[in-house]
Length: 354
Image (tube, rainbow, N blue to C red; front, side):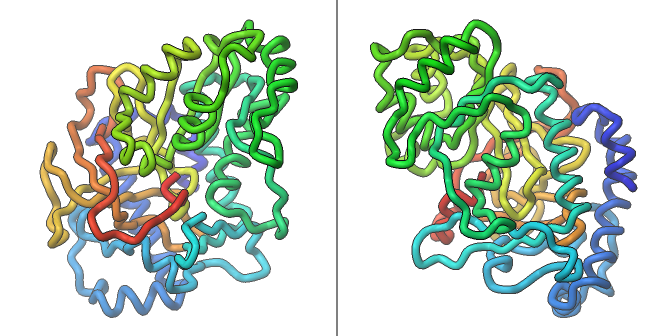
């Protein structure tokens, strides 16, 4: 019932004191729920001696490392109630994470994602250019992280057009049809960061276009590994997009398949990711001690969304730092932070950090 109540508020409405009470209660309730419903999770808590832990704040709850979703089956709902299975894209030879969703969990994800994205694109469905290629899924209810993200974001658009054909070639003919019809007003451009860099910035020939992209709202996330190797920063990425296409509305997002729906979107005004009333973040050092603001460490993510699997409190392999809380120059309440990439020696995650 908590999600149903919170959905009536702005995602960035609550300050620290207003959020603390209900969020702590929500994580406590989810922990007990998963402890009852998921045997593997219950055993993990026993090993961690969770029953004897004194809970004073969010940092006192036992977290799960993201790697555990690759090794154990973790679900808190009956098999016959599972409507969707998400698997991390990963790389060849790497075991993917498996996330099980029932109808309620899937609906909650959709509602919250819609609430967050409406702060960027409004409530109107806009024409959508997807910087990817269509994919034929073999299993109707099984989605890798990449396709799950495309499907999840596609609900905000209409007249969907894929930039690439099934041979990964740019479809200039139909792209120009799309631009002629929709480029005079706002439209959405969606894709993964590396795919956008490879296909829009590098491959797409501006001379072959009949219109520009200046009215596009570009939403992208994940896939920074390739750009880091090329020494392409977030700032440089944006500069290249503006210089070539005149795109100025660019929004980077951070999220994981293990907490699908709980996205952290980068504010265009300040350049920081922001937590919402549905999510929170803690930074820990290599010994798992909680770090203060402006200290780099492992990112721990908490979310009120996961009810069909125990993904409400996870430790990632990403490095980040909390810059502040409730006092960002952009005016949004909540914690705001930076992500600095992967921890050294962490297992490659492919596209799972979407």
